[in-house]
Image 1: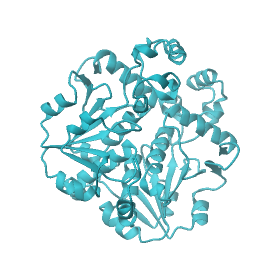
Image 2: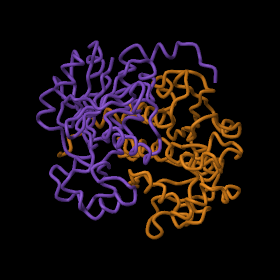
Image 3: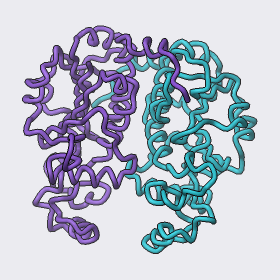
Amino acid sequence: LLLLVLAEASLETIPKKLWSAPSVKAMAKRRGKAPGEMLLDRSYHHRAMKNLPNAEKRGRPDIVHFCLLTALSTPLNREGQLKVYVHTINDQIIDVDPKVRLPRNYPRFVGLMEQLFKTGRVPPKGPPLLQLREWNLEKLIEREKPDHVVALTSKGELQPLDSALGKLAKHERLMALVGGFPHGEFSQKTLSLAQTLLAIDPEPLDSWTVVARLVYEYERATSIAKSRLQAPRQPQ
Amino acid sequence: LLLLVLAEASLETIPKKLWSAPSVKAMAKRRGKAPGEMLLDRSYHHRAMKNLPNAEKRGRPDIVHFCLLTALSTPLNREGQLKVYVHTINDQIIDVDPKVRLPRNYPRFVGLMEQLFKTGRVPPKGPPLLQLREWNLEKLIEREKPDHVVALTSKGELQPLDSALGKLAKHERLMALVGGFPHGEFSQKTLSLAQTLLAIDPEPLDSWTVVARLVYEYERATSIAKSRLQAPRQPQ
């Protein structure tokens, strides 16, 4: 099982100190929502975000959207061997059901996330597909009990992903932390939770590129890739 | 060089017979644009699309958006060894400059594509980053002169991607056709332009998953992956 955590992800509702910014007030009016019910999004709130602490890591829900679509549509997920969590920049945990079919359309994804932050779960009734957990990253690790935690970071040791996963995938429950933010690095606190720090390219890569490669190599390192190729073809 | 063609992609302006549909008229009014200047998008025009021929392959510009972001952010592209084209369902060709930085935000991407269909190029002045070419897929192949054309399709022979690319990547100029549509298959005409039909999974995969895996294995099959790992680290 691969426990994929999109860590310190750029996903949050608009913080209080920005509620009176012109771009935020205009959006609230247009969308008929309270400022605190809407996602922080650099595409729209760039200027207002200027004085926000840690601003370069914030306001990019599109990264979470892409990474989730990338991870959830893989053969690994279809085989039931992937479990995805989003850990946000505010140390909240989103528990993602492997069967969720997320909207491909970005504005609809934003609406869904806003509903999640408001009500704590999506859909509001029935088995939850997305759930906001009262955990932080440490608590998540305590609960999921991975055998090993690897953080993918440009601060790590540069290694070919295939040989690194050849070893790491031997752990029954491998947790991989991939940064869900556009620039900068994991916090020291997050780094301290990983046993291995791994860099897969000399330059920083987009989060979705790391997610795609990691899942693919995990399939190859376990027997999943092979067994799918030997399975009978699905009727088209 | 990998010539990646997102083929028969779900990207077009709203066809004339839908201009009087309520969802189209409402959007035109809201956005202050003529119906024929806006992209067809199933998220908004689902009902209106019901009677459109070939409807299951149309109205998904988000697929083009994801696939381009996936392809353009890879090490292969940074090394100058990737050239991407979009071939649309209407047999138009979009020439994508490898250096283009596309908007991550979907509504902005849509705006950019609308500008492209209106003016034929983006930006309107200076060196074009996106260009609408007066070619079709056959003409593109004539101009780019690939040594080999492979189409990734569930109709192809099921093979592990690494061994398939181990052979295919020996061609100096390899062109790969990846379907840029949500359901269905390449047309016979497109299939007839490929020398190899390759399936990489028993089930159909999302286009961006195919793009990510293809580019990654191409890096591994050529010496690009290796040479990047041996290159001196970039200052962080």
